[in-house]
Image (cartoon, rainbow, N blue to C red; front, side, top):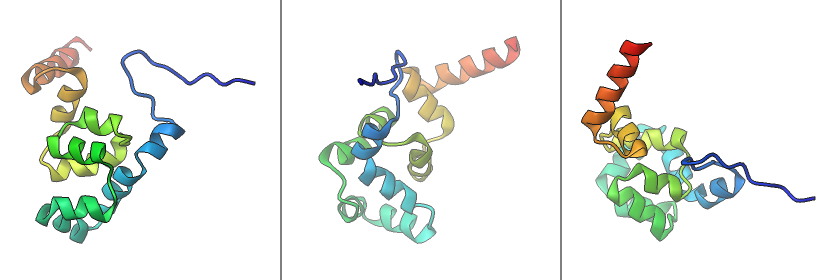
Length: 117
């Protein structure tokens, strides 16, 4: 019996393999539920990466503040939302990155959609 991975064009499907690849990154993001961990991250990001044994790809993704790279490094968007908040990224910032638009273009698209519906 062969299984076919679910594919959605233009979308990274978060499955077991991706979850396994992103374990360290997601564990770090989960730790941000505690204020002291958020403060520790802001105090020394590199030490915090090492504490959770992030891979080089995960470290580079976070350093670049690029959510798509974080997703490709195995990040789960629900966990990454905690990190995005710490980094000062709004939902519109994240949406713009995911769609390849500027933040202004993304906001305009949201407003236009709201007026249409």
